[in-house]
Image (cartoon, rainbow, N blue to C red; front, side, top):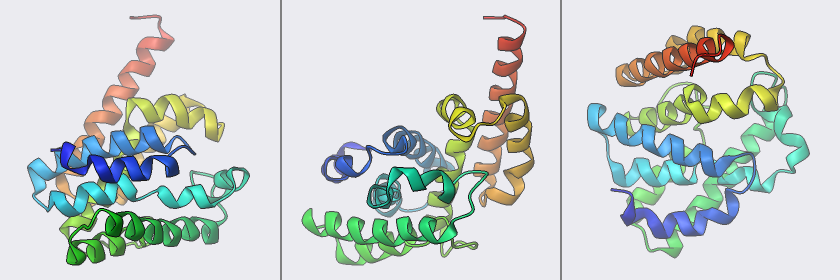
Length: 196
């Protein structure tokens, strides 16, 4: 499923070497594949949108990132810049690989509001939004986010559980989030008690 998007990924790669975006994109892409299986949607829109959704962070100085995303974010203007720049870069990459023009327009529209737009435009948009947010519940995120945000995992993991219904749009997204959150909570408890 992912091989057909390899060229897009290769062109996106130089923009993903900030903010742990390479890892974030891969984890979100895997969640998107799971959502596609259950919810439907168009992989020709969803998977390129996931690969490209955060390329705009490369245009923002790294010392500004933590003000613009995460639980302590105060600078929503900078967060918005990453969406706008990401949409611009995504269009350039997709045009470079001669992607279908109608699909480019839909992908760009999803990217330009993937964080700031509260309501989803379509099923494709909802799946991209959910796959992006599901990252926060992943094993990878729980090894990165508490450190980068300076949050105790004992507080962060239960806090994540309270966000599920407000963050996730699709039924499958909420189900996956609950499963992932439960796994993270169990692993954290095992770590505290020295259980392998």
